[in-house]
Structures are given as structure tokens and as C-alpha cells.
Image 1: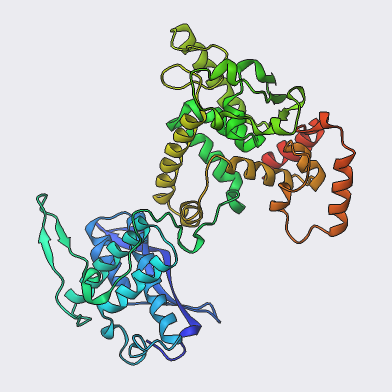
Image 2: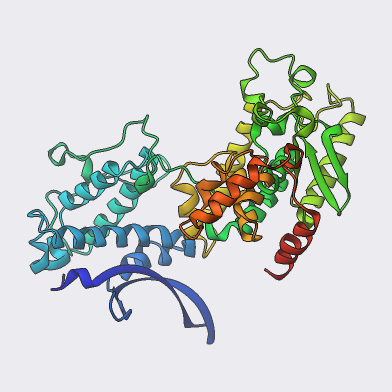
Length: 448
């Protein structure tokens, strides 16, 4: 498998080829497995690409359906290189004999390594399913001589089912328990925002909400473009929304639990946290408006008006209403959000060129509060100071905003921010200067 393994890495690449079909040249994209020289960057096509061709491409599988097994195979091969470099006695013989020396034992150790990293059960099984197909291919091509033949049987639907050889008792393969909620290398890692691609991802997430969960699409806008927390959001009434259409958008944060949630025994998920430190009449949040926000707002109000006309709404004050016509509780909003999240991740997983976005969002923990994180980073991108960001978030200290600050922020600027906040009138909390929105937000959206 080479002499200086640490200098090489297996990678997946999409390339465009020309094929002669019915005497016409046709351009198609294909998936390849290549060996990359880390120093020179040179890519060397690898014969194991044939696994993707035979098992997926030639069977009519889409490009996205080919990418997943290709990535698992590359991860496995890179794992072999890593263990050889570490001098692991179970792997070092591979340095001399190459792929022909690969055994089920090596696949078992690979699966166990993902369990040890803290991956959840479904993720480990995802790796295992593609890996057993890869081993089946190697066996059928007589490229390996495994410890024992693989077991296969035909299902009721005439599908060939391959039993995982890695579950043999002799290998002691480790699998996560059903209760494991880890997230791979990011076990316990809570995602703060959507990362560098946040502008596109937030837009797509809202557009998906319009299509899939229109009853909370406006809520998604208020969270991602206004940093409003879940408990604060479900308390918002129609009268709390202060808009000048396509000019300004503000939301009054109030404790409306007596008005909206008398039917609930426990209203802990409906508590507006901001009112812990701000008086009711001061909790006013500015929303970063754009064309999408106004589109969602218009559709939401029309939907409410239509349902009210049909006598489907039990409390006409509510801005967010569940399927029974009651004010939407925090629990229901959270459930709808998670349903949206699952659909969004599924769509990302099958969208060409979006693997990195999918990996970031699928291997980390995030919930409704991520809207507040994205909002904070939008404020940073607008060039606001730490003080301005804390004010815009409706915070009375810089502590929460500091989670998003990197080492570029000097100690002096932090001291200035703290002193400024001490002297800041609480009436300013949650407000953003109109000129700042116009010059640093809307212009940024127009010009990218």
C-alpha cells in the first residue's frame, strides 16, 4: 500500500467525461476514487473506482447515490493508512501485501472506531452497510481472501441481502447503544450557527419551511433574523408585531401566557426569557428584514386571516396557531421545527455539491436556538461592535455575544464594550439603528 503512507490520502472526486452514445458525444459526471499526494496535490486515479462503477453507476444509481459509498470507502482506506503509520500490529502486514491482505477484522476495527468517537447508532450502521457491500465486491472480484465466506439471502422482495460479517462474535465489534446520542467526532458539540455558508443555508431553510411547515415559517424568520428565543416567539401576538411594510419590522416581547396558554398546565417552554432582565415595555426586538421576510410575513397573515374566516382559530390574538386552532405551544413549535430540520437535512444529503453543508448540520446538535446564533453572526458581518451586538440581541451584558468572538477582538475593545453597556439606557435593548440595517444589511444582501 505504499512506502510513505502519511504523504497520501484517498479522496472522492467528481469529474466530467464524454461518452459516445448513439453516435453522439454526451457529457456526464462520474464519481472517482483517487489517491492524493498531500505535498504536490497531484491526484492519481485508483482502480478501486471500479467498485463505484460496478455496484452503483452501472446499476443506474444517481451521482449522489454513488458519492456516499465512495466517501465511506475512502474513509476506510484512510483508516487503514493511519493504523499502518501508527504501527498497529493488526494492520502493518498490509504495508507489504496491499489490499489483498484486508480482512473482516480490519472492517470491524473501523466500525468500532466510529463507535468510540461517539457516533450515534444510525451513523455507525450507515458506515457498516456500505462497508459490507465493499467487502462483498472485493470478495466477488477475488481481490481478498476473508476469514469466512459472506452470507447472502434473498428477501421477500427478491432483493439480495448481505449479512454483515463484522458482527461475528470473534471480532468483538463495538456498536453504540440505542440511547447513544453522540455526533461523531463532534460528540456533545452544539452547533452555534450555520457556519461560513450561513446566508445561503438560512435562506434555503426558510424556503423549505414555506414549503414544508408554513405555519412556522414566520417564526423561523423571527428567530434567524431577530434572534428571538422559542419561548419569546410563541408569546408573540398579532398586536405585538409592529411593521411598516418593507420599511421596518419590530416585535414586542411580552409574557402573554395568561392570554394564550391558559389551557397548558406547564408553561416553562413558553416563558419569555428576556423578561428576566428587561421590563415588559422595554423588550422590543428589531428584525433584519429582506424580501424573503416580507414574503413570508404576507403569506402568514393571509393564512391566519383565511383560517379565522373559516372559524378555525380559537384565539384570534395568537400569531402562531397549531393544527387544532389553538395558540402554538413551545413544545409544538419545537416538534414542527425538528420535522422541518429532518426534511431539510434529507434534501441537503441528496443535493449535488452540498456534502460539506450536510455533514456540518447532520453531525452536530442544534435546535431552535441556532436562529439566535445565526442572527448574532449576521450582526458581526455587518461590522457592529461587541456593544452594538449585545444591544441588538437584547442583552444587558456582552457575555453571550462573547461566545461568537474570536481572538481578533482586543482586550481594550472588550473593556470599552463593558463600560458602554453599563451606561446604556435599557430602552435601547433589542434595537438596531435603521441606517445600520439599510447600509450594512440590505446592501450586503444585494451585493453578496
